[in-house]
Image (cartoon, rainbow, N blue to C red; front, side, top):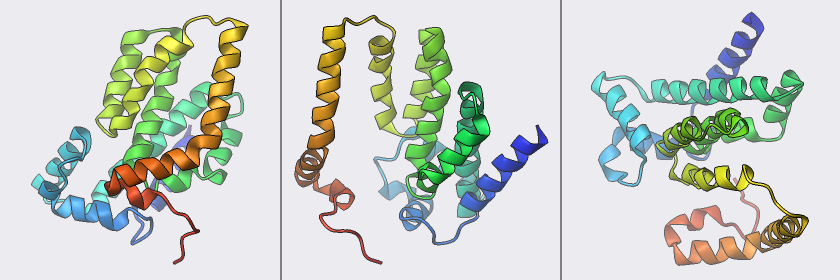
Length: 201
């Protein structure tokens, strides 16, 4: 509807036309201008940057394309799965997911595609689900962990197995902080993601 299009366009413009807003703004600007120095960037993102640079388009264009893609895909997925879609869109904005589109733009595009792929998960259509996850993986490699999720979700479990999963999930919740601390100290390039004290600006 016109109302849906208006919401998508407004959210995309606010996110895409920002200037020096978001923790990754300068990082992606540098990657856009000097892509050769970012060897770990995923193929989908590097391809988009190369195309935009070929046509001599600006960094703002890159942000707008990323924002519109993320918002529109997430919005379509929410409309598909939610019984109260506009309330769900409000929660998407108020619970911080929309704000993440200003920071982890690759991650949020991948999240939006994974959210869209749930329609195929529920239908047990593995190949379409796999295609969606591979596309998400071209935006952020971590999306590929969603592939084994298909086999976990589509099988039946006993009460004992569900209890074990619950206990494991609970343990991971409490171990998240020390595990993140250990990970960021082993792989120091990710140390920026661990803070012992609140960030100051």
